[in-house]
Image (cartoon, rainbow over all chains, first blue to last red):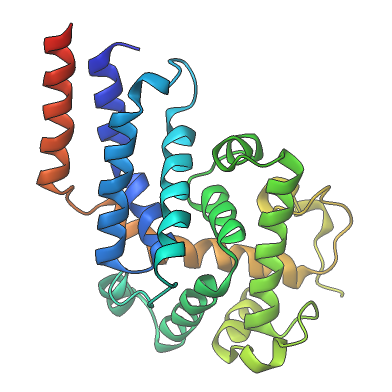
Length: 183
Length: 69
């Protein structure tokens, strides 16, 4: 990869990386720090990037590793205060807003590896192979993490069987949403 | 559950290892809602302006790399 290609690709991937940083850290200021640290690490490690391989997965791996190392230094996490507030306010019903905020809180309770895998497959459209590459896990492990993340969220928000604590977090708003759309 | 739509349950869409037979339509409905909810939460971040200091950092590195040849 020509040097300028590397930098152009890095810039083009910044929005996705930033969204991932926000989703992982769930706090704007922390996410900006995480993004900055990730870019610094990527620039410093440029020589280790293999041209022709998946740069998005490479960057996500750096971001995830930074996030996990930061977690060890400070405890997770504060709720998203402003990520989609405007959009929710304009387009959503009260029930929608309640359900999404409950989802936000539940996302923050997932184990980091499950949260990361779920966001990669859902928001970035990454394949299980790409997730495995980015997280250093086996493909089967990546699949399992996504599956368990979905079912854990379902258990928390809907009270589906899978969690002994399901009823304590059951979300009437989420239940109403899913029931309404389960044709 | 009578509302189950087994044929539309994709392992890729649901993340379920093997996909398999349909547990129930609620899982599918929840997965659709979850995907939609995550996009509502995080898609707006993608449209935010990138920080100038970060772009300057990358451009400086690009120049430094070019000087090294």
